[in-house]
Image (cartoon, rainbow, N blue to C red; front, side, top):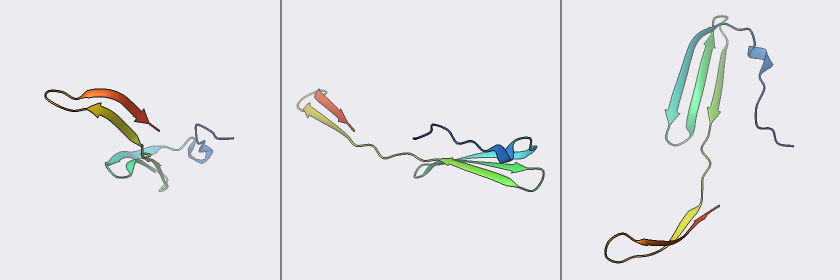
Length: 71
């Protein structure tokens, strides 16, 4: 059964030294947490590809959108 979260009990109670959030246009974003005990935790969120389409009628002015499709 899929879960909508990830539990990380090993990081509970640790003191954060540095927290950095990186953005990457290709892979999504990553969070890096460095703790005072010398350990680090990294997590990332990846963008999933989306398939989209539009049926439209062109011509002068703005196109007329007939139907949008999305998977």
